[in-house]
Structures are given as C-alpha cells and as structure tokens.
Amino acid sequence: MSEHDKIRELLALAAAGALTAAEEKQVAEHVRSCVSCSNEFDEWRPIASELRRLPTPQPSSWLVQATLARAEAKLTEQAEHDWNRRVMIFVLSFAWLLTIASWPAFHFVTGRFGNLLEPQFSHTQFSYTWISFAAFTALGWLAGGVAAVMLAIRQRGERRLA
Image 1 (cartoon, rainbow, N blue to C red):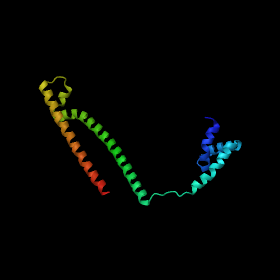
Image 2: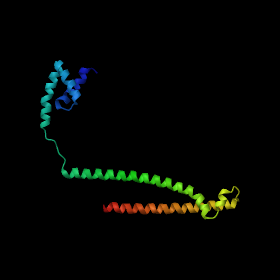
Image 3: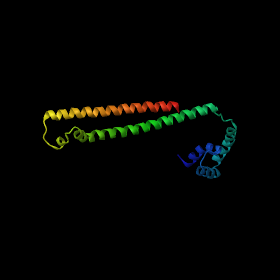
Image 4: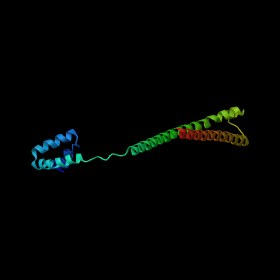
C-alpha cells in the first residue's frame, strides 16, 4: 500500500478530528501537495461537521446505576474468588506440612518416639502405628474441613447483611 493510499484512508478521520497529532501533521503535509486528496478532504469536512450536530443518545440514569452496580458486584465476586483460592492453597499446603510434621509429634505423644529413631520394629507394631496415625490425621483433616465450612457459612451470612 502506497503512502498516498494510507493518507486517503485517514482523510475521513482527519475531517472528524479523530487523529493523533502526528497523523494530523502527516495528513496536512500530504493534502498541501496532493490536489485529489485535498478535494476529498474538503468533501469530508461538511459531512463531519453535520455528524457532530446529531444528538448523542444518553443512557437513562437507572441503566447507568444498574450497570455500575452489576460491574462492582462482579469485580467484588472475582476478588473474593481469587482471595478464597489463595487462602485454600495456603491452607492445604499448611495442612500437608502439619501432617508430615505431626508424624514425629504423634510418636512422641504416644510414647513411641524412641521407635521412630530405632531401625528395628515388628510388622504388627508398624501396622498399628500407621493405622493410629491415619486415624489421627483423618480426625485433624475432618476438624479443619468443619472449620472451613463454618467460616464459609458465616462469611455468606455477613455478605447478605452488607
């Protein structure tokens, strides 16, 4: 596409005053030297002038308010969703860390801390230890789940009141 063709595409926008300063300067320089573009630019000016006189439809105030309220609610919902996702990732990571770290604590509480450090142990003792630890861990996860559900219910209730 030649420079002349590029300028011709910008003539209507130039007449409407919708170009950047650099584009306006480029069009003005070209129009000074090109008679056909100058004539076309002169044809666009009255059209652009008449278009500016047309009334601009304005939305009703209730529509603007409703749209703003919906947009704000959507943004708030998205921010809350993102926050909940970050909190959930943190809580799950922390729970797994606690689960792994509680293995030695479980041995200490049950009086088998020495067994953790000793390499020999019987198969039945090993099974009992793992079953006990699995029950201990499941109870901890269950308590955490109940707490999370209770917090979510409370948060929803507060949101409805706001």
